[in-house]
Length: 253
Image (tube, one colour):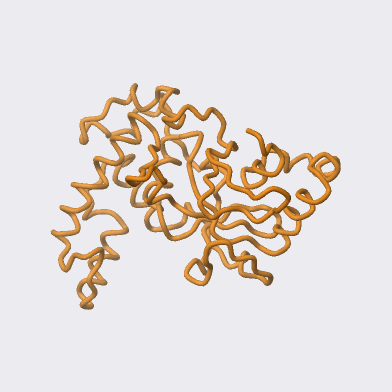
């Protein structure tokens, strides 16, 4: 995957949005605004003592580069689902998606929204009579993207990913992921624009909530909860910093 770096000035037409390249390359922008320094650290932990069943509102911080695939069966998976089978193998590369390529076309190549692959797809769907994101014309969609997506990208450049919260302080509108049998993180359908931006801007951490887990992965969580992390991780050191195990391995953090 080609990434954006300060030396790649020919690939950075961001002044069309009034952005500063130096500002976007400042390493401080790669950290979440609440000061969490490591992508693998969970921001919140909700777990009943002695159980491996995670609260669906738990936040995990993930390095965007560790999210390689998105699932094709997101709508079949519900919060805290533990499912066997091959659903985790039904997936496509994130970098091959129209949204990722279009975010790149817009902010790296300097394309207008109408020139992006995503908007060409939108145009075809609109001609077929479909309403997209509440809009029935390409002009309305363009205005929506200019009013919401472009400012979001500017904010990502300046501050990274900020977590929205409701009046009670609970996080809202967070992207969700699923965990495959070997711990692979599979992206869902919510937050594809934001993930694409995070990847292009080389952000080091990206907050998500886990929706579903493969039953084989849940068995690993069960084993750690019942036998203790040290015993299990002697043979699986690579899992010690897995973001979906932090609540079990370091319950007091």
